Image (tube, rainbow, N blue to C red):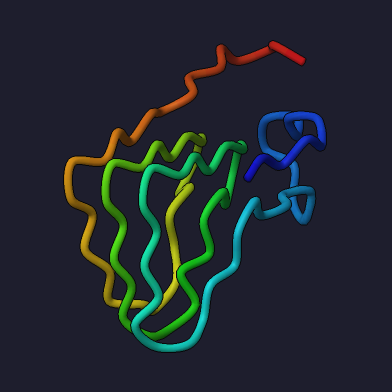
Length: 85
């Protein structure tokens, strides 16, 4: 799943968009990719299992009140320089 909206400018408010919002209980994801910028994966609530997944984003890209387990997942931080578009 990929959020294809452009990267928000540094310091912008309210411009983020999630690639996935998950709520409910006992959801599982295997060999999935979640790609975005800020707020990529909204783990709203419930218990979730991620295995062999790729999750990419910038500031607080995984957030929410869910209780999740990430087994052999790649968490990738996108670093942007100040002043970049």
